[in-house]
Image (cartoon, rainbow, N blue to C red):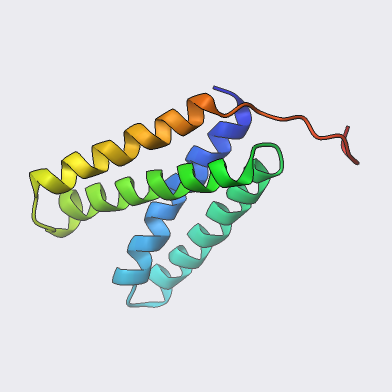
Length: 113
């Protein structure tokens, strides 16, 4: 896996934190962590989108973030476990992984080439 796809996974990892933060933040420290997570997540997403197709990057970002958020809510916040929900998340992840594998990195000529 190349460095640009790692940025997408990094962005999705921090997406989980800021989405959970939007729901559970209740003081200056948790709101600060939420804001920092948003900044890191979107910086990595934008950086990846500069080298990879934006539509695929966004779909992978949202899919991984959704799966991570649902799983985190079940594991850490008492959301009820539902096998149908888990199966649907797995279908989502299969689609995300499929998009990643069929998308080729494109090289743009520009200021940094």
